[in-house]
Image (cartoon, rainbow, N blue to C red; front, side):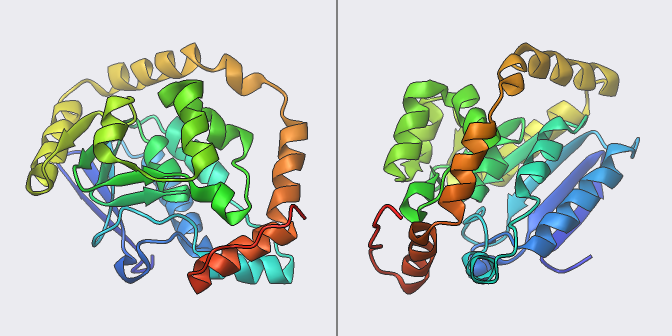
Length: 256
């Protein structure tokens, strides 16, 4: 295991910490693979009752590592694994809690949304700035936003690309508990312990019931949308969007 992901356990609660605070916990390929392997192991661990995901430092996660993304764009290498990881976290039999103390943007926002519950500090922000990078949210990732906040707010979040405050996220149902920064750890611990005290079979069953209730939309064909996402990901605009973000300047999009 690397130092970019920290794992700790006690009293049935496993805490997973994204540990790249100097990079705002940007998620690289190695982290994706370690998280996927870790969740696979946890799935068969009978001592686990609940999994808490958090970020070290000031940000929860700024999403994918843009420098690595640019390197993959330039080399033509596929950007693999993150959608599958989010699906794996969502489908875990263990309840999951995202503890969001700061920015949860792009893939960081999706990571939080694919957890069962979200406890956030009033300093947190949530956003999906993919359009600002010339990218398109894949069908499974856009669907998760629609499931949680509905189509109207999903369009606002995706089309503007602007982050929303934790207060606004709480108002539209994206956040379950909103607390003052100094009370975040205690609130998250209270939630985790209240879940861990419940019967594991009942918890797993109730997760399955809720997931089944909204599962029909996941059977909709989306090959055409996948192609749109691929075209956006490999476009000149996407390369320009990533370069502009790294260079801290406005992008010059040409629709190409």
